[in-house]
Length: 81
Image 1 (cartoon, rainbow, N blue to C red):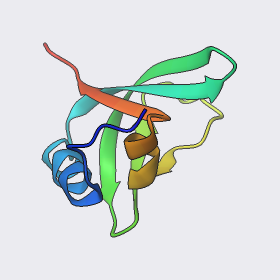
Image 2: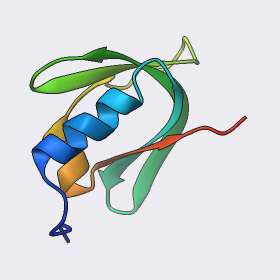
Image 3: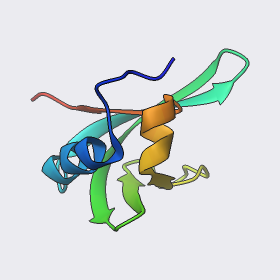
């Protein structure tokens, strides 16, 4: 379900605030399959953002659109130290 208070612009602002910080990325792959990995947000672009996983053997996609956060496919949370 899409939350009514989220917009693409508010998501862009939230991702910009995480730029350069360590985050935990949780991906919904469908059929109750999830992948969670630590990464750093390193690229902010008009229609997408990129993350660099700490695991160099990670073979998944590392560029995501802001609409994937809006739809709930991708979740970012800042890591606390």
